[in-house]
Amino acid sequence: MERHLPPATVRPSRLHEAMRYSIFCGGKRIRPILCLAAAEAAGGSDGTAMLPAVALEFLHTYTLIHDDLPAMDNDDLRRGKPTSHKVYGEANAILAGDSLLTLAFELLAQAKESGRLALELAAAAGSRGVVGGQFEDLVSEGLQPDAAQVQFIHIHKTAKLIQAACRMGAIAAGAGGPAIDALGRYGLNVGLAFQVADDILNATSSPEALGKAVGSDAARGKMTYVALYGIERARREADKLVADAIAALQGLPGPVEPLAAIARFIVERKS
Amino acid sequence: MERHLPPATVRPSRLHEAMRYSIFCGGKRIRPILCLAAAEAAGGSDGTAMLPAVALEFLHTYTLIHDDLPAMDNDDLRRGKPTSHKVYGEANAILAGDSLLTLAFELLAQAKESGRLALELAAAAGSRGVVGGQFEDLVSEGLQPDAAQVQFIHIHKTAKLIQAACRMGAIAAGAGGPAIDALGRYGLNVGLAFQVADDILNATSSPEALGKAVGSDAARGKMTYVALYGIERARREADKLVADAIAALQGLPGPVEPLAAIARFIVERKS
Image (cartoon, rainbow over all chains, first blue to last red; front, side):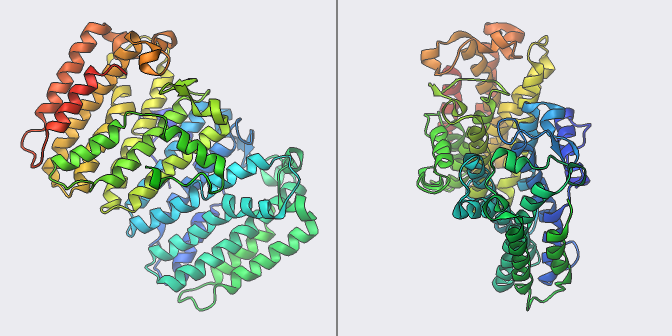
């Protein structure tokens, strides 16, 4: 990722510094890891999916920067550190996010299968993906939890991009339609499990373990799986999603154990 | 453009409505027109550059939505109508901009030469292009006008994208390196002339003619060509840039008169 970011010595230095600050703030790198592991499960060689993997992390980081803005979730902490707008101001946080989004597509443009990869990423990231999910998340604050709406938000805000990460890994590996689709099913289930686990952590973890505010979903009246069904049923649902994800891995040509391990980690993680 | 935007009936409806509001707010469509005209000047047939042309207008519109935000230029009017955040609120304006930026790359991914086109657009739009120019524009407010800094802002905030529009038209038309470069030189000069003309209009026009606030550059201490050299020298500079632009058109295989006419229109326009 270092190599694909503009150096902080290039103008505008402070903008490039803001981009780097959010990228190197200690994320879990779930999306690039899934992309690389999906490429290997699809029979690709080590590193074939590096450009899409880096693009996915840049894109994900832009969504976090914009989501944290005062006009959106107004979060002060992310990954245990002050959010971009707290450090660089609101205008620069917006611009750093815009730049990372643009850079994600610049990286894909340099990959083999650039067109197909960009289509996958854009469909998962735009108004029919992450941005649409964030929109519905904001308008649902304080409303009575509703199963269909929680599902819409989770699929769009989180699961589609994780699904795209897995599909992009398979595409970069040169996989055929069935392998791409199988990895997409794995990704959709893992993505939903990831978001349900996030909802549980927000309700049960500590700020020290999580690196951000805890209980904020409930305080804001966020429409989460936990608000809808409670902790116990959310845990059972996450376990079921992980089992479905792992079941989708059967018959792939490459090693699938890393993907199965990631799926299990996602529901067992403490942060 | 209508066909390439998500219908307002698709969820999230209000987000798609916000995207449509800003696109159909009556812009001059300079970038798509230049892209299409450049494709014809490069010998391409009618409409070969339609996808990049639409992508350019979507991208440009996102930059306007974000530039107008309270954290940036805090503008209430654009093209004679209330700005996006005045109508839809700040969060939705940020998200509508993010969606249009993403959609621009989604369109390019469907074009022939998708990788090359996306590289051109991303380089002109990101932190080393429009976003970088907007960043320097904001940090320069209220500072003593400086020739190098005005040049940096004009090139990055405006001219690079117009240059990219012309290069992208040539690439979509299947042109060779010399034609792409000639149209790029035309575009860079036209882009600079466009921005100098903008600075002049901001200082001399009426809100009725311009569709947005007038005199706002001076009131905010914006670093413009007019602030640096005054109106008369700015007019001479714009004329010189237009002459240089037209000179770059010699030897192209297709009709160049439309591009020459656009260059002249750009400095003579009243809005």
